[in-house]
Image 1 (cartoon, rainbow, N blue to C red):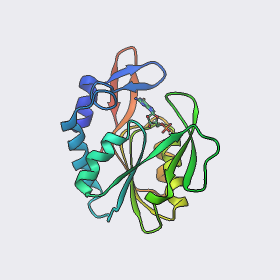
Image 2 (image 1 turned 30 degrees about the horizontal axis):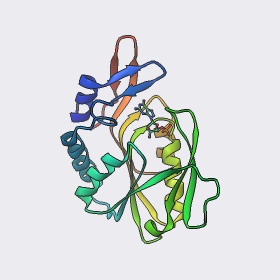
Image 3 (image 1 turned 120 degrees about the vertical axis):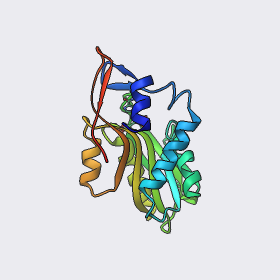
Image 4 (image 1 turned 90 degrees about the horizontal axis):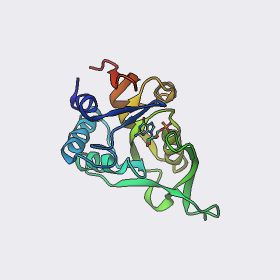
Length: 194
Ligand code: 5GP
């Protein structure tokens, strides 16, 4: 098991409805040393890529994106969830359905912060059905920038997102891939990775 898998086993909580709670170390209270390890590991996995920007989505992707950005030494841009229906032409927009909140948000990125010259690494905390990622990919591609890779902390391998994104040809790296989990026993099984 790698450092993140070990931490999930130690402190993650399996909830009914295929939800893994990691709010004691990842997306409510945050362990900054764990974040830093994750940033370092993303740099190792995408070492051959010339990244100019890291893109994530608010809120829980931001901390991980920042940890990675320190190793790539590039700015972080986060897609903002927008309530406004009357968006002006200065933003790229995508519609994202939330797995955890069961609602739909428009997310926006200002055109000032993403352009055709950019080589983007997309980062997020979870990959479930892939809606959040599809939104971030769509925003990147509307700007003309290149998606160089996608880094996820925890992929839920039993949901379709990972398969869909890999089948589209993107270089997707997940630090932990949950193969199955059992909310009654509180157990989590991971997919073997090298
Ligand atoms: P997707 O768009 O891939 O269906 O879901 C990704 C988003 O849903 C992530 O950004 C994350 O915030 C949230 N999410 C999905 N599954 C889980 C889960 O099991 N636990 C937590 N804490 N968040 C999740």
